[in-house]
Length: 324
Image (cartoon, rainbow, N blue to C red; front, side, top):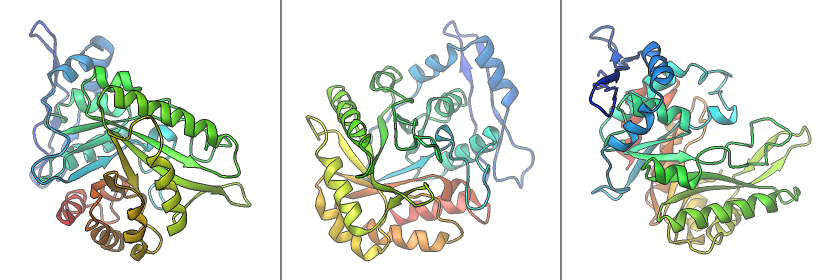
């Protein structure tokens, strides 16, 4: 399968501002090639093309006829999280990442993408976001492996940016360490952003974890049933209104615990994927069971679909879509 045609940006006056079309090298290729030189040319000579492309973008409702969501996530690089499995810099090539994203977005049943501004701007210029749900990633300040990793400050999209660009939702990461007093600041800033999104009637997807430091100082998210239950309860109660709040939750260590865990809230939820290593089939099976629960409305998955162990992005995405 070849990725579909990818369009370029135009001046408001009608002249062509550049066309960073993908280039398909041969009939057997499964991914099209992004013209990085053309993207850079547009960025340097006509930066307004990003806003123009956003204004032209054909939009759609958050939920389609199926009532389900299949979102591809690509906001990891902005937090310095470039690794997939044992490949520490797997996501470092921006052209490669964009090609994988364009392929994933072209597959039937894929509703949209979650990413930071740099990646969404590229996808806008490539014309890959028409009729797709676009989710802006809001807090990327907690860099992976940093001493301040739990200080998840809002360094990405602000509510006003999501509104201005006509995007469809925002997403924020909420990691809580009971031994870190700074978690209270994280809770408060998260609540205020939820308020700001609700004022704009924009959905916000909250990804909560109970997190702890190992004796070596590495941060670990607790995926036990009790910890995930507490994280859902805390996240559900943040802000002055929960009307526009969704949850983005992991599958528990024991997938059989998910039914009980998801009884903690009536907020709609999507499952997150994470790095599944080489056990792609095991991940599918865990997602399949949790997707049957009444509050679970879809999947937001990134690395495991964009960088599958066998390299077949299209098949990985199609299999995940089939679970819905």
